[in-house]
Length: 303
Ligand code: 13P
Ligand code: SF4
Image (tube, rainbow, N blue to C red; front, side, top):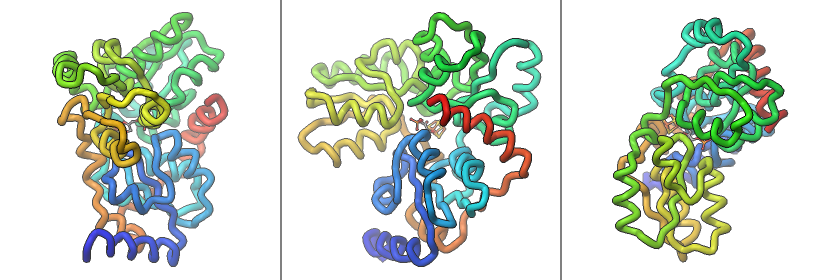
C-alpha cells in the first residue's frame, strides 16, 4: 500500500468504527493529515472532552492518552503505539512528590500536564505550556511547588515575581538538549531570522528568544508575524509543518537534534491498527480518574 492508500483506508475505518483520531503537532506529517484534530497538549485535552465518537485514538505519548481517559472515562481510549512514553513524565512519581510535599507544607503543587495520571492525583492544579502563566497567576496560593520541568517552572516564575516557587530538577530531554552555542550557530547562519522557542528549553536559551511560547503559540506567532524567516526552537516537526502551511516564509530548526523520538515512534501503520482496536487501551482505576480529574478540571477552569 502507498502512504496515500493507507491514509484513505484509515479514514474509512475511522468512520466505520466511530473513532476520533487526535494527534499532537510533533507527530509525523502523514499522521497529522488524517487526524480529526492536531494541536498542543492543551488543545488535545480540550478536544478530548468534546469528541463525540465512542473511541479515541491518541497519536502522541502515554500521558496524553491518560488525560483523554480521565476526561472521557466512558470512552475507549487507545494509544496508537504502546511504546510512546514521555521521559519527562516518567521522571517523578507519586511517592517522590508526596515526600517533597511533606518538606514544603503550605505550597500548592502545580503539575505540568506531562506527568502520570497517578502523580496528578496528589497535585492541586495542572498546567500546559500554553496556559501555565495564566493558571498559576489565577491560583490563590502564593507558594508554588512546580513539577517536574524546572525550565518551564523557571519561565513561569520569572513572569510571576510576586509568588514564591520551589522547582525540582526534571525536564524534557529533547528541549533541554539545546544550548546557547546552538543558538549562536543558528543565528550566525540566519542573522535576519526571529528566534521562537518553547519554554521547555533552558533559561539561557529562552533568554535569547524573540518569542517564547507553546507549540501552538509558536505556530500562531509565525502565522501572524510580518517577518519572513524564523528559527524554530521546538520539536523539528513544527518547522516542517509551518513550511508546508506558509510556503512564502522560511523556517529553520534551531538544531537538527530537536527530535522527540518518543513522539516519532508512532507510525501510520500503528494508526491503521489502532482504528481497528489494536494498540494500548488505557485502563485507569476509578479513584485515579476521580482524583486526577480534579487537577485537570482546575486547569480547564483557570485557563
Ligand atoms: P505543548 O504541547 O504544550 O507545547 O508541550 C510540548 C511537549 O513537549 C509535549 O510533549
Ligand atoms: Fe516528553 Fe519532551 Fe517528547 Fe514532549 S517533547 S513528549 S516533553 S520528551
